[in-house]
Image 1 (cartoon, rainbow, N blue to C red):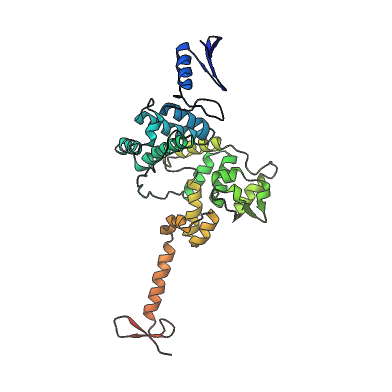
Image 2 (image 1 turned 135 degrees about the vertical axis):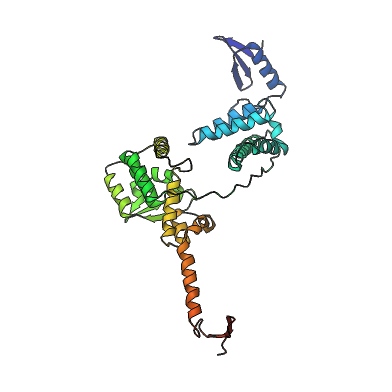
Length: 342
């Protein structure tokens, strides 16, 4: 058949600058007919056929968006779950309909937590965005997320830290201590270069941080000593993320610390200890690299010293009869203050 050639048991379709290979002649003929009549669209950049079904879109999204990311397995798993609900053989055009989001939401809402539902909806949003950018759909609806209840802020105690470090080999144990003492994100630590260390502090450039803003973190004596022990290495930390994450998880499980303890918990621990020690939230926000102090407010409940100080201030006001405030005096027993005329 014109446009189809057979070689080594495979059937190859050629149409203009486009080519594709199939296991059977029937598949090749269907594909050629689809291309010739415009039912199958071709990517002008790669000359490969664009995804027509949700199953094909899922694979395209994995190849072009998720592959290579640290969380590629979970991203793909959430995508698989979404496509299974909507139908792998359904046309991509289904994603232009608002009901797609509601179908996915309602399917998972009664089965899993709000956080898990949101991960599925996030995967759906990525699929929709991919289809929209490929001009496979002409509109994309905003997918409303489920409201997640505020969870307990987990941080590790000094005893848990000691146990965790003892459970790991020296390099990984030092990485745990370094993250606790600096509040760095794990990728920030792993990408550190010796050029980032200056005058006993870490200086991160905008390109090295999540918020695209430079920041400076003074080193504790322990963090400085860890770096000194690594000074003969090409970079401060030469461990791989996957190894670190796997060993960390094994250690926390062996110690019975719970599923809510992750590497990111070490960053929470850094912030929590600072707040409990009386460090101002604005300073903590600067050290963490938060662009908004509102993000740091999650640690505010730990600042109980501020509450005690406020009550002490109030108590001091009550015991001072005439000098409660500059230029004011108290009248009667009702606690009413009058501004003195100057």
